[in-house]
Image (cartoon, rainbow, N blue to C red; front, side, top):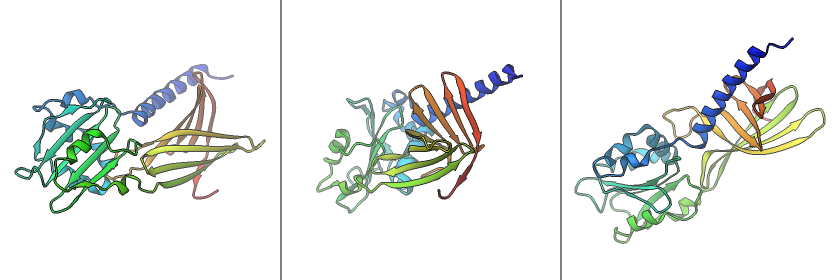
Length: 257
């Protein structure tokens, strides 16, 4: 006889995890309104969520970028719902400067300039090919300086994981670069008994760390009302539909098919 109390408790725990993962992976909400005045804007680069977005986007350039925020300029909201923030080293307004546009969901476009160069560096995780108007206006104040536009179209890098359970073989591809934020993922699964295939789009949830790309904790994929969870914590595949667990299998990760 099934223990419905145990099943309900287990289902509740799974949904708490799913909600937490989905919220973290899909949108870490940043209260940009908290930093939209000259009196409060200097706190934005110390905010943990903002720092996480900056570190993920900038990688090894994080220190050079944030090092320019000695003096902060007047922040302003952009027409598409972002917040423009700029800073510079004291007395070096036209030489050492940085600026970024950040959105409540963590999307970010950042630019910075160092002395004696004619190129303003630019990185983004928005997926947009064009540089935001706010940053274009920002760079126009520097004489004979333009953006490093080739870097905006950097080649994408893919990372492949393979996971197998008694019933399924799964290939997961995570994409970094070319506008991707290193969390976009695709799921290609094959059911062993009849070779039926399913292909899904989703995202990876990563462990917080001090690296530019942090280790993945779990993958989440959606197919209508059905959610597929691939966990690297307990090596499991869980399929949930309409608040019911359809499948929960242990498996193993491997380097190749």
